Amino acid sequence: MPRIFWERLSQVAYFLCLLFLPFQFGKHFWPPYTQVSGIRIDYLSPTIYPTDIFILLLFLFSFKDYFRNFSFKKQQLFFYLIPFLIIGIVQSRVPQAGIYGLIKFFEIAFFGWYTAIFSNRHRQAIANIFSLTIIVEALLAIVQFLLQRSIGGLFYFLGERTFSAQTPGIANARINGGLLLRAYATFPHPNVFAGFLVLSMIYILLVLKKTTNLAMLSLLLGTVALFLTLSRVAILFWVGFLLLVVFRKTGKKAIKWAAITCALVVILFSPLRFRFFDNSFFSDALLPRKELLGYSLEMIKAYPLFGVGINNFYAVLASLQKPTVENLSYYLQPVHNIFLLVASESGIIVGVLFFGTFVYKIASLAKSAFTYPVFFMLLFIFLVGFSDHYFLTLQQGQLLLAFVFGLSFAKQN
Image (tube, rainbow, N blue to C red; front, side, top):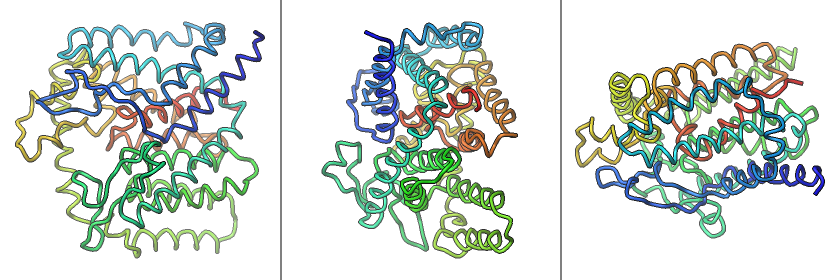
């Protein structure tokens, strides 16, 4: 068949992957190694998502182009890291978990590579897909927040969990003495939903030369939904980003002062102020995360060169901590820092290179920040990465990370 036929199929597979990125519905498998201390760990469960199927099809449709454009010289650093990952898996406590993690690593890396060679030619189409998914997810999130529960029905098959504000372990926020269910949409956690909204809205706002009605509606609904996630870092970043856009694109002082006033009113005088200045946050969230950071540093000290092995953080964590019945389920989580997580599981060398790549790319793109949106997208992931882990541990986060990395390595037109 002609080459153009396979190129069209590759494009369709890629667009479907972006379209289904927000939906977490998938088939989970629970082999014995997914249980740590008798508890199932979701992060270890091999899962087949629709996006996995589309990436596989993408590879099958484009593997000729992949090898035609492949250059070992350009990707040699990537391949130099593989021995570190394999040795870490071989010496790990649960090699099966490491093998699955390595497979996911190659899958996500390929998606990022394809983004690098594909995205610049189809910015408008990608922005339109993000606009559509934002509108669907935002409307779902608004209804969830108003009802304080999930909707169910068709949305269940798109990945919406069944929950209410009273569901154990659900993400609630304390607002003025009461608890409110944070908006999930079809994501596994409100913070992941917030990350998707910020990254996709930055892309839409800075990529489109002419703002369409579809884009405007997605930005409006997406901003509303973002506030309903009550995700602190994401909200502050988006507000700051919008202020930068306003200050850059208008010379009128009245508009600038109005933007500053609106931002201060939202943060300081709306019910959101209870979310940002609640003292209980420091005891409920920061202290447990500090303990996870301590365990991560212990792993790095004990396994500095090759780490404990991909996906083996949980098994080693269970042996280091002395949990009680009350806090066992919480502590069997990844460290809330993607750079320490990489160093813990893959060693200091891989961790430093991962951190260094972020710093180098952010610095190299700073001059073209408002003409190439990946600067702000990388900066957001970099900042969130110090306090969360979903860019490495959850399917949606991994795809977002690969997408942004792919953009950062694409040619800047």
